[in-house]
Length: 283
Image (tube, rainbow, N blue to C red; front, side, top):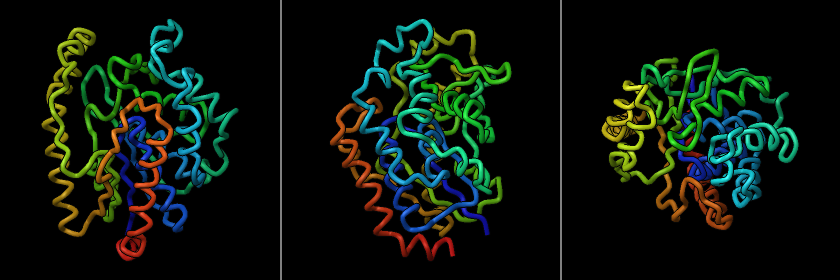
């Protein structure tokens, strides 16, 4: 039997997932395989390193910090991202809220991050390196929101946000042999994705990548269908799904620390209340 943990993205809304993961750590719940999209994998590595509360500390300490996110970073020619790339992916884990790379490297299971190949428009599932430089580059690629990040190059291939091509990658977890899935969403169960309002701008900005633009145009339909299939798996007893009842108005670039704390607490409480169900499910 192989347990997989699947983490949806959602930028700062993923603090809900951090709450779920912290409750899993508190309850001694591990997994054999973890796959995350965008902030899902960026937050998920702290679960793998066993650092309960680390994501909450990072979010509440740095969300108001313009070095972490802000238009100034996007306008900076050396950054070209709404998020400070060096500050977020190097200085925070190395200087301010240390990441336990030793524990991370010791994790015996499998970890993958979803990225979208800008040339093909297809999802790729890349193993997360256990070193600081390699993991940081892959996390940047998975988190690279269109229009808000530059295209991230990895070994000569350009990538953007994994959520564009596979927002809830439970099918990949099944392909990798998982027969029990814990899936954490960052929007309520009844959320229905609508076509991207910036699609016209995206088509212009990425006109050199027609396959990527086509994937963007189909993103909403694909996401909604994926969610329908996920709930079918849940009905069949093959998945446990966690989702916020309300996102408390938290945006992808939320700066309100109290709202972030409350959404984290919602995730923690939901998983803690379901702990016996989780233990029975994973055996």
